[in-house]
Length: 124
Image (cartoon, rainbow, N blue to C red; front, side, top):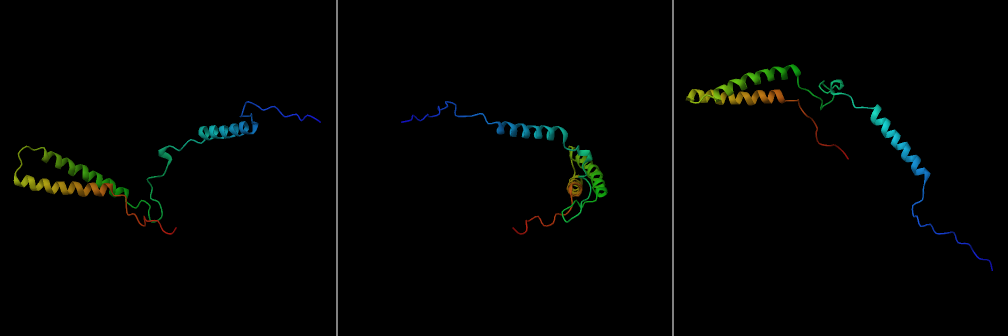
């Protein structure tokens, strides 16, 4: 009768696997070089302010928005000076309400980005 030799049972459950080490080095180096050589573009190089094509592009006229900003600042300053006045007459209160409506009007004009079409998803 021959005695069968049983391989010794290793007490270490985790064996050294060189394939895992090689894969870790490859992914680590790809991540390192991607991070260091492909930096995001600075904001001044991105063309985010220009009008884009399509239905949902920016449709607001930049010149109109600038004029609305100037008018808003002018009306807001007049509103604030009148609002700081301690004793207001009825005419001052009417003018204050009128200026308040104008401030809201010009604020909406300066903040308007254009129309947005078809925001609901279509199809699947």
